Image (cartoon, rainbow, N blue to C red; front, side, top):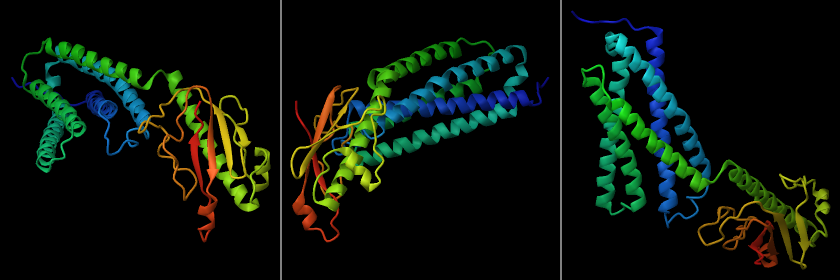
Length: 324
């Protein structure tokens, strides 16, 4: 006798939620490992690209994976428990449609991924970083495709394979998330880093304001409070509320100081702030905004010749950190 079952709102909810959390988990897993590859195999042709926003992406991927995978496992367990008492539940249309769509997406992902690998190999552009990223996509898509193809074809109701796979995948997910904490640090460290980013941004804004003051008066301010005449809102340390340090060290030079909470490497190509160029028209010196977890001062020297050579008299300064 043919076993049939009409779809219910509960079937639609559970299967759709299972598919949605599966896709979220896969996207989070791939994005997470892409960031790990960026850390472990940096692109020498784009040294600062791997730092701009990389922690933000890593944390988003970690959050997505940490939330979606447990929900997916729970929903899958509820669905599987229902199959034990209602065999016809395996034949609902919403289930078959969703998983065959998943098979199609996984198959197309593997095909496109393979074409990309071959194409870049023939071009000679298959770097280790690029190859590993494609390998992550290929392995993940193949795992999804293989499991759901087996699940749609299996006839036995009771099988230990899903439970074993859940434990294996869970261990991989847990290890991946744990490695993210090793690279990105604890939430407290991330908060310190965000404060430091704000401090550097404030110092750079002060640098612009000081150069604008010099342009209008042909002299440097004696103290930061003089910038108020330009209508400039004076920033303060985001954690303590204290004012930033400022000293005019010459007619065309000054330094700005802040107390930093975390260290960031100042080695070439490893400067978090390497994408900041300073005031328009003048390049920032290498290693310009690296700092230790201590009070650090950054020296600026106004390039007077640059201003005099510009018809529009644009602001410009060269910045470099003072070495201990």
